[in-house]
Image 1 (cartoon, helix red, strand yellow):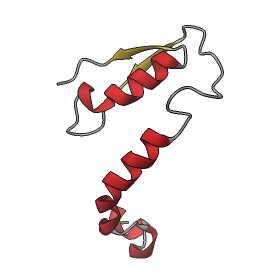
Image 2: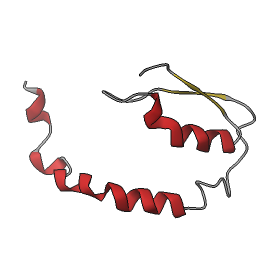
Image 3: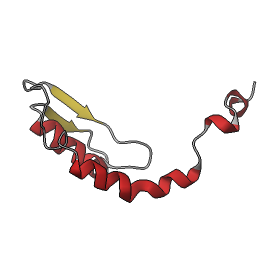
Length: 80
């Protein structure tokens, strides 16, 4: 069976949603959770950050900072 036929076209999100990046980033910056409010302490537990396809470690900088503020010990995978 063809892998493409496993998913109908209607189940895939439309490509125009990618244009919402700026709005979603602004919403994220305003969210109190990003500042660490209401989070339980990570107690120094390690967290390995692995970037997605064609992305490097710098793409996860915001997430690494957030995890550090939450009490985790993030490590990067070393991908450029």
